[in-house]
Length: 291
Ligand code: R5P
View (cartoon, rainbow, N blue to C red):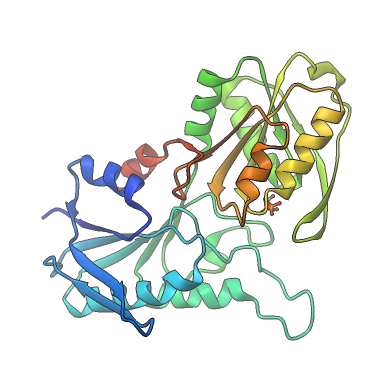
């Protein structure tokens, strides 16, 4: 019996790659809003005794969560044997500490909700900073997949003489891993965040890489402030126009356009979040894990 994959709205490009593999039955469903804004959810496929995958990337998560809960609940009622949430981008990973009294640690509440409705979670490169593993948060098996391999492959094919740039301390893990895969040097910058869209970036000495193409790599591009500040400092230091690579294309407001206008050579992302900048395909990593 083939597992069934339900591809929730907005996830079609990656979903098509999963169904095209022939390893899944494509789940049929209706998900819409009543005129008053409430959700109508109906599954049309037979799910009894089957392993069910629900593909739903969790960028802009709040409007997605309640439909996801209704969906998981009805799958369970109709006899799904196991329900795996594939959330290529996992939200609510950055609010991992109480900075001020009374603040909600939303990462915990969010994890409790997901774990209550799903049996398993699959995600790509979650933002693990103060949490070292998803197991510290999730009580269900939570598997982490990595985009480093397809990113390294893309850089090797598309960028001449790259130097990998990690814009902050946390990005060192990706910068080091990717640079070792393509035998390129890497440099990690120093970032201090003063506010949502206010970051300060400083460069170490980078003189010896003037002939290289800087490839700035970050896990999340949200307001793109980190990327834009890194680009600004690199260009001011006399480096070539940087290529910006993000795993997860969140791009709040008009930040994609702002970043494209900031003196970059290119902006590319992985297809963990559907976006016009998607050029790096992670479906092989997903299929390898599932099949
Ligand atoms: C934070 O430490 C992350 O790794 C990213 O650097 C951050 O989320 C990027 O956010 P923004 O695009 O808003 O600067």
